[in-house]
Every structure is written in C-alpha cells, then in structure tokens.
Length: 149
Image (cartoon, rainbow, N blue to C red; front, side):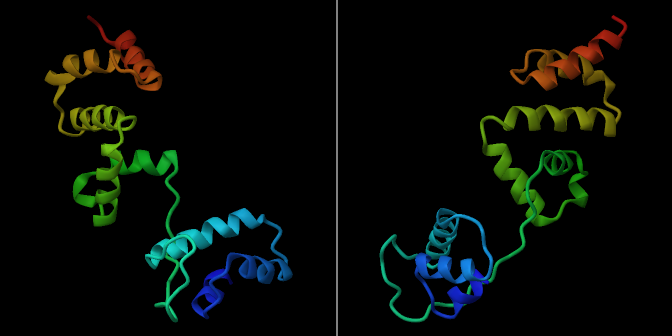
C-alpha cells in the first residue's frame, strides 16, 4: 500500500501514514518515516528535498531475512551450489570484523570434513581454541575432549 501510494506521487511521510492508518495500520509514524527515508534514498533525494517531478517507479524486492540459520547455510553450503547473490552476501559478511573469524574457522572446518584433510585438524583446533568467539571455542573444546592425544 505504501509503495503504491509513493509510486502514485504521494511523497510525504505524514500523508502516507494517515492513509495507511485509515486502512487499519496500527504501527508508529516513525516506522513509516524511516521507510519513506529509504524510498527517498533510493531516488537519491536529500532529506527535505522536494522531488522535481514524478519519480521512477520503485519495486519492493522481497528480501530474505538473514537469520542465524541462513547465515550458517551460506557458510556451509558448497561453493559450487551458491547463487551469485549468496556469494555476494557472504563476501559482505566476511568484511565485518565480528563475523570474519567465525566464517573463516567454519569454512576451514567444513573443508577439513568435506575434503578429508585430517592432517590439518590439529592446526585448526589450536586456532579455534584461541578464538574470541565462545560458541566456536566451546565447539573446539568439545572436539578436543573427544580427541585422543
């Protein structure tokens, strides 16, 4: 509804909010204002800049939410089976300083298993035990507990 009204030429957040409130929307004005801000950014408009004329039509792509499960699947899925947009998303995640170490260790572990590279396990285990991420460290510790030295 909001995007339809935007594409029809209604570019004011207050007017859009009032229109959808009459249709039963019970959310806040600020939620609508943030959405309108994103629409304005998609058109390259400044915060209070009036559109010069009718703007090109915007289409709302349905994006999948990045859940922990989907993020894990992106990392663990075989590279040959990843779509281009999945590869791009994974590349962006790898740039994040909090995610990069976890992704690197997870990819290294899955490659150990996938390609039967047991000779590299001790090296991976040492890195994982020193990791700053408690879940990965606990996983590595549980592997070490089961590992005959």
